[in-house]
Amino acid sequence: MKIKLLFLLLSFTCFHFVQAQITFQKTYGTPKNDYGGSVTHTFDGGYIISAIYDSNQTAVIKTDSIGDTTWIKLYPYLTPWTEWNNFITQLHDSNYVMVGGTEDSCIYIVKLNQSGDTLWMKKQHDSSHSCGYRQVAEDKEGNLVLVGEASVSPTICCSSIFTKMSSTGSQIWSTLVTCPYPNGCRLATVVIDPYNGNYLVTGDATTYGLPAPRLVELDTAGKKIWDQIYLSYSASIRAILPRPDSGFVCAGIGWYSDSLMLFKITKNGNLVKAMDIPETFSLGTNYISIDTATNGYFLAGQSDVSSSNDDFFLSKLDTNYNLLWTQTFGGSQRELFGFMKTTSDGGAVMVGSTNSFGAGEYDVYLVKTDDNGFLTGQNIISIAQNSISISPNPFSQTTIIKTEKNFSNAALILYNSLGQVVRTLNGITGKEFALNRGNLPPGIYLLRITQEGKVASSKLIIED
Image 1 (cartoon, helix red, strand yellow):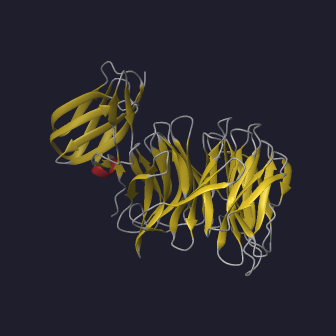
Image 2 (tube, rainbow, N blue to C red):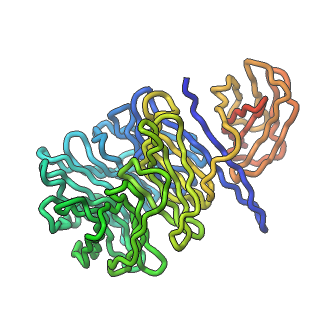
Image 3 (cartoon, rainbow, N blue to C red):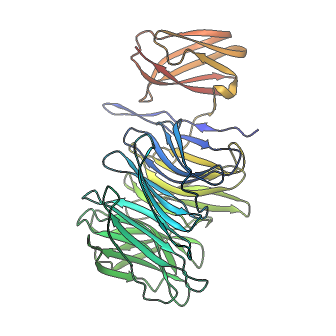
């Protein structure tokens, strides 16, 4: 049986205070195929994941700060187009908005409250073309800006979709980001320029040969300010990040060598520099993410390890775009990358799918690293999988921890929500023992029991 793995790092940086970074791997899923599309670090310290669940259901997964499931919601009115990653983000009002494409050839946007309940939903049908929204961003006025595309014909790749909506789902305008080439142009991502509030759209232009990278800036009325296609390169821009000098750094896929490419671009769209990032592997995905990191940038995607084994990768670049390190994540089978974001503690969170771990076939795969890209510590098996029970939980004064097999010189460590050790017990023997609250305040704690190199973990809740 495959075992879900959780790797947890509790490291401390000591200056005038103690700060901990939690790291883990988690899977979520059913015996059928489950795919992770995107992930966002939520205001409450947890994570929200867009997913395809049980092979053909659109889903959202909410977790706490250590990746434990808070809730999973399914949306039966959105049968997903499985070749298209859905995308979710949290809005300033703490609600969520998710976009994507569906099997019945339509684009959709749905706004959800903090419990995953539907507030409103908009769909646009197109019986003749496959289509979908790829990404959504919230602008400074709280409006929603969406990019996507529709396939046109076997010889014309696509027609762009660019829409602006109010926070209540009313369409403000919809416009085409016109393509200068007859083969069509693709759109990939949209970001809001933090300096002027305009909209930046990435993608590629399918010229008469291989696609060329493209970056477009539009004003808040949808009027094109500039449109740059960088014909000297054969690549697709899949991610963009505003830089402190008012310019942009873009990440993409080089079509000749499946290489990871960076483009340094001025605020007027002029290309300053294009770089291949030296890697020991080729890319295995159309999805690339870039985000800020401490003194540099994080890059993430999917690497071809072998013909049957792809892994997630996370790379760190310095401020001059020099490669500092690369870490890979996955098992002996294939992992499919979806999205990456920097977290508030300086680490990174990545989501996608794994065929190496989980409940069967592909499962949603969530990876949280520290600022050095590490998952350190021991493999942690859940309390339930280790035949250990805790009751009551939550508790106010005392809880009883039991096991089917005898504890033998086991050790217990209890961490608070900041990752600080608040209780240790050593030399535990027998089939059960009591854990007393003592002077611990109410809250959520992480319990780890270690015996003979194996670790079992569980969340404990203390209440008054």
